[in-house]
Length: 359
Ligand SMILES: C[S@@+](CC[C@H](N)C(=O)[O-])C[C@H]1O[C@@H](n2cnc3c(N)ncnc32)[C@H](O)[C@@H]1O
Image 1 (spheres, protein in one colour):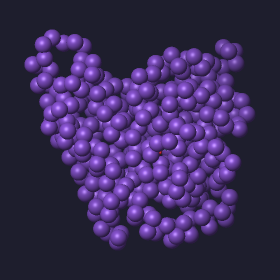
Image 2 (cartoon, rainbow, N blue to C red):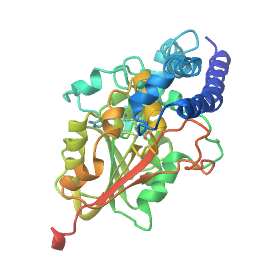
Image 3 (spheres, rainbow, N blue to C red):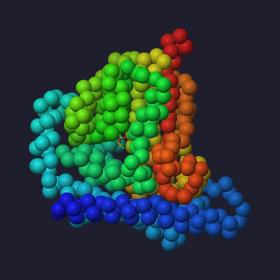
Image 4 (cartoon, protein in one colour):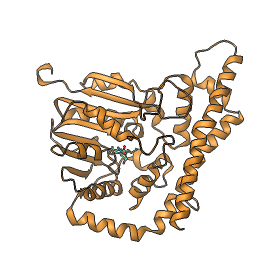
């Protein structure tokens, strides 16, 4: 397939996703409002009651079909990301591997056992997940550009906004990005704090290679990408002043989230701050219903369990103080109170490791 046809098909899918996330979302929202009016009494709108009222409607069927299959078409089929990258595999890997090997910019651990929760799911419908194929990092990177409709290209993106928030007025000397993927969450810290050192860990070798390649292109020397389980790292206690993650927690089962929080606590220095960005605060039962459906249709089996966790209590149980869990505005164009389009329930989860005196 030629580049132009591939790009046109992916652009088409993004436009279709925008139709789904606006027009079809609004139709579903209105159908729910109408069903609510005719329902006898308000039973507190549990998610199951909303499902019962909506699941057989044309609006819900069409909405769900688009949600599942536009994402599927992004990856597979004639113009999918997977065949596109497989056709160019040798060419793509040739440039990339040589540069990475040349400057040892990434540490791959060939003996690392990937956890079963990770290998058992084709996460967000990515065939083989983000780890099993040499070009999986590139597929993930290209796919991420069309994941979230509505966000304008010229605007400060979600990772830049998150970095603003995570840093605030602070200049942490040592930062750990847990589950860095292809480095998009790491890069803003690396760029903004050239005198700090940033470590970024992930389970996926192809993602880490791509992350290291991108950083090498920008000639940054204050970052290391390392293949490691974020729940069980080799760092000494108290190594970091800031520990972050973006879009990682919802990909972990509850027990693993607990382990990751415990590890964040261990590797933070006293007084250090942990800041995560994920999908958690759901303002009402309708959006909870929509979010749980998204989890099922997009192959995200741990999204609902995260949304049902008492995260505040879990974070506090690890020893953290100043626990803050609040909605995150991912774009200037988003009104957090409006319900006019599908959006992820972006949430910041932050907490502090008590200083030595308080421990
Ligand atoms: C949705 S991606 C987010 C990547 C990146 N933080 C970003 O915002 O672009 C989730 C990442 O978490 C990684 N991951 C999942 N479980 C992990 C674990 N236990 N340790 C380290 N990384 C993990 C996956 O390989 C994947 O790259």
